Every structure is written in structure tokens, then in C-alpha cells.
Length: 318
Image (tube, rainbow, N blue to C red):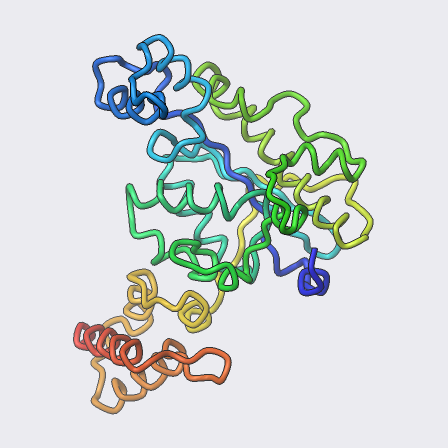
């Protein structure tokens, strides 16, 4: 772990892990999904398609690792507050509901931490979220991996990358736990069994499993900083994280989202705004939305785009 990570305030970090299953319990050989999956796993040397039984078996075992063939059924989130670890499994409602809950919670944290989250969890979450809504309107830009250079991902702490450095080989969470002399988090379930568990028994056991993985991530982070590990965590399956103030969210997310627009409209209610009121509101929004500091400054085109967004929004107000 580098020196920057050593100095971070752990209370500003959201620890996470997602649990993903294959889209369907049994792959229908007459479906479009079967046709696409068969092409995806074809013999790369001969370009020949595999027999149906091999395709079905591969789908059961490995589809949850492949984008486009998955459903997120639980997201574990955790944070440290006053020397205690609080962890919750998000598993209520649809996949859309779960992803939206996670994105909202993210707004209250400066950093996000997990195992292989740059290579798997965050891209999978964003891609699956785009089935339902514009994820980047809700997920803070600092946690969006798409189109980013490595040095633009400073708010994302990927424990696999921190552990292996520039070494080429991947490693598992279980291997890192073993390296540090920590107990495995895979006591009753492991990733290879999650899909079958979900389709046979539902999400309950998976949610307990994801919380253990999040707790393991917290302790790996502590070990990397030569700090004492936590012995247990508070299971907060009903905790709520307060939203940041509206203007702070506008600044941090760098997006004038529909959610923020609705909040402003609710604050104004039926009040008839004068020209001066709109000018003051425009100045306030621009000061929060348009970056003009030495460390982060929008280019001319971005400034003009944001000014136009604000002007169009102000036209909708009474």
C-alpha cells in the first residue's frame, strides 16, 4: 500500500463487495442468450462452437463472471465510525433498487475500497445499472471507472492492486487473508456456489456471505496499514446514511442530476422568483457546479455546457 493510502481517514472510506449470479437458472438452448453465450465461449483456435451440453455447463459455472449474463443480487457496504465497523447487505427489491441504494450511500463517502473493484465490481455495477437508469447521474463521478486513466482513480482503493503492486498475477481475497494470517471469509459459501445458492434457496445466505467479505476487506486494509484488526462488526441491516447537503453533492458528483433539480424545486415550492432571485440562484449553482480552482478547473467548453444546463433548468422554475 502506498503512502497516500496510509494517511487516509478510514471513516471517509466505504468498503464494498458485490454478489452476482447468472441471469437464469437454466440456459434455454432456444434462447438468444444461449446463442450469444455459445459464440462467446467458442474455441478461439478453431472458431468452432462448443456442443450444447458443454455450453450449458459452462454457463452454470462461469456466466456470473461475464458482463451481460449477470444479475446483482446483493451488495455489501461497510464503514468505520468511532472505532466500530458497521456493515449492511443491500438485498431488498429489484437489481435496480439495490444499485440505486448503493449509489446513494456512496455520495456520503470520499473513498471506496474493495477487492478487485476496479476490474470487476464497479464496472459490473455500472454496466448492469445502465439497464435501468443513467448510473452516472447518481454514482459520484470519483467512483466511475469508465474512460478513466489509472491516475484518475485516486478515490478508489482496490485491495488487489494495492497488494500486488506491479506484479502481473491476480490474487484472490482468500490468498491475501492467508498471507496476512487472517481467517478465510469463505466459511459456508464461496463465489463458485453463489449462483446455485441463489437459484435454489434465495438471497439470505448470500447476504451473510457478502457481509463477511466486506469485513475481511476492512481487516485487510487495516493489516496493510500495520493497524490492529477488528474482532467483530455491527450488523446494521437497517442503517441509514444521511445525505450530504445539496450543494456539496452537486460539487462532489459534478452533475446537475434530476434528483438535485427536484430538491431545488421542492425548496422553492410555489414561490414566484424575481429576476434577482434567479440571478442569485444562478450564481450559487455556478459556484458549486463549475470547477475553477487551481487543482480542478473546467475547460471553456465544459463551463459553457454547465452554464447552459443551469440556464435551461432556471427556465423551468416559476
